[in-house]
Amino acid sequence: MTLRSPLALALVGLAGLAACAPRPECADSACEAIPSCPDSAFDEAAMRADVAYLASEALDGRAPGTPGDDAARAFLHDRFACLGLRPLPGAPSFEQAFTDAEGHETANVVGYLPGADAGDASDIVVVSAHFDHLGDGRLGANDNASGVSGLLAIAQALSEAEPTDRTVVFAAFGAEESGMEGAAAFLDTPPEGFSPDDVVYDVNMDMIGTYGATGTVYALGSLAGTEGRAAVAARRAEYPELDVGLGEPSDLSDNEAFCSRGIPYLFFWTEDPDCYHARCDVPDQLDYPSMVEIARLTGQVAADLADSDADLRGAVAPGTDVCDRAGR
Image (cartoon, rainbow, N blue to C red; front, side, top):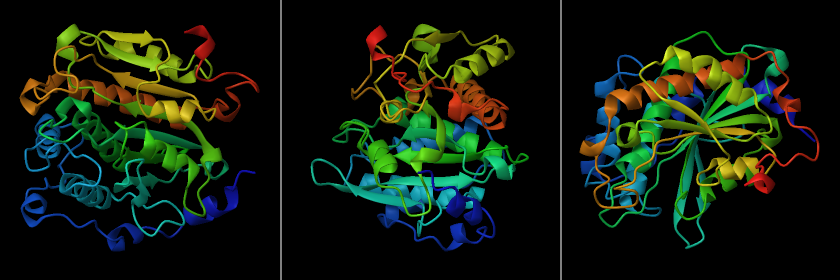
């Protein structure tokens, strides 16, 4: 049963929660370097600074359970609070703690902007990106500091705009590299007052910083629940500088946790043939002008879905395989 009432009630009167939400601890030197809130969304210098911090040697690749993981979560907490995002209903903070399969204690960092339409108060579009990487000197600039930078830019843009009809949740997931564990925890062990049954679409970003390597950004997505693909097709003419490919389904990122639970998705991704999971995945290798435009496109598509008059909840027929595995 979908728990609509608690979320609808929680959308009122929570503006002060973000300010008092507990902040993760991190080493003084790492905390002192946390970038401040940008003056505007989709600012290239600000997105560079976010990537530079997350993929710095001080954070050493943000592996779960490490000081770099703690620092990344503190950074995300500060930015979510600065942008006026709210912790999920029933959650005491932006953090959703869990233990990964190797016994490392980590957390997702999750906040939301309430929708304007009371009738869609519990129809949720999720914008997601994982913040963890492999650690041990592999800094993960493209994978996935780039996606987190895009998520934060989108959150800022939507926080400064008129509310979308549907609620938008911003989810920075931990422990993706070990098997999408953070996304699974988000969906399987939610706080009281929030139901994953209310999620109607996931818009995921993973590795959006290497457009220059191949000259294409892929919007991969489920073939069932095609509103997302239609939204990309409608918007891509506004980005003549980007070659936007509408690709086949993919199970290579956190969107897999959503599609395996019947939730359609879009997954924005650029190939990184030389530095994927390698020590050369550093901030200097990224194509920042294109990354900014990819994030802007992703944000517009997410907002279009959140404002769509279509019944996204009914977009997938009963019994349909959202992941389209049979077609691969």
